[in-house]
Image (cartoon, rainbow, N blue to C red; front, side, top):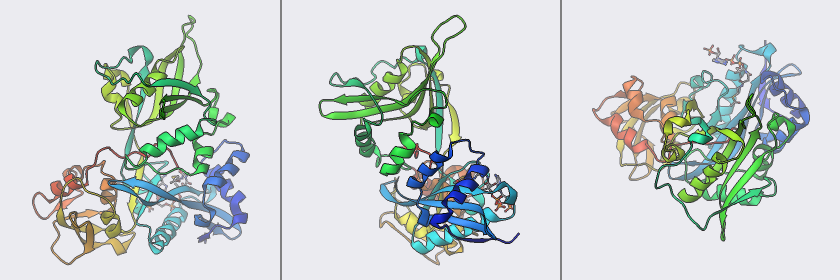
Length: 408
Ligand SMILES: CC(=O)SCCNC(=O)CCNC(=O)[C@H](O)C(C)(C)COP(=O)(O)OP(=O)(O)OC[C@H]1O[C@@H](n2cnc3c(N)ncnc32)[C@H](O)[C@@H]1OP(=O)(O)O
């Protein structure tokens, strides 16, 4: 097979969707696929073509994503797909090659993605940078610890998600800079991804519902969820709250927002997917075993320009060391970099390295959620000066832990 990779044209949008539809075994109605066009930046999509046939796709979204210390531009890689008839012949590799070259030329230092399978992207220099938790909490075992925060000025309001859009946005915008991995949402992202209440999105689980926590000054928290109705054979209510997202600006609002779903009548469980690994609910629940928590990998990070990426974030502790990076896919990153966190600089050097590591490990540690020391334990970071791995590990760690929350 011969194929070429080039930018996608507007006219090729239906074919772009066609490839994704097949590759992802999708079942959504095609008019929904067209809504995705409002989110995707067609000018940043790549097409792999075999003759007249579009056989592979890859897109990039221009995100402003929070990293330790504040927001920076990040390329959100999305819609990576190869037609089943053309798989395992190097199409993905060619798309990734072109995309990384384009990002480098454009001066974008960091790329992020959600991987459909964890085995795909390490070979292209992406590192597993964030995790998330899912919970299945029995509502009857959901009492909070004594001393859980409460604020008598707060009240609950039932809202229609679409009508409450401005309130939701106000809460989200107040917290988006607090946690690495969160990214600013465009109008289209709110409309098409967060507030999507199509039959397909409902999946038989009822409409998207919303509880808002507010005081006289305005909203301080919200929960978006669906309810799968149900009863046991003996007619005991057995519905399930399927929590889609929950944000709050402060601990008291956070606790009350959680109570608004945990106390939902006629429901025996709250199933919460994609929660941060340091979600405070873990400490609020008096019986934390009732979280029934599970763990998944979340964001993957690729340092497209190691020097600029490392200089763009803040560090938790001072570090001044020389890092030797191995990057076979983006050779412009390979070599020695001196990171001086006090100066906020990361520059090329020919000094002797304090440690050596592959670029995917640096990507995994970039958002502060994956201690480099553990990679050293796994033999993936090599120390040339004793203590260097711990020094860099401490400097790169961050609280709160990274989490993007919304798949892109
Ligand atoms: C950010 C996102 O959009 S994530 C979504 C990714 N897309 C999907 O999951 C949709 C379904 N799958 C697909 O479309 C394709 O199978 C893809 C995109 C995963 C792979 O495309 P292909 O063109 O077959 O990959 P390609 O032939 O370039 O393979 C490159 C290497 O990756 C490996 N690889 C490909 N797919 C996978 C996988 N799912 N798991 C592990 N390794 C994989 C190949 O074996 C090959 O390894 P090698 O370099 O050691 O020989």
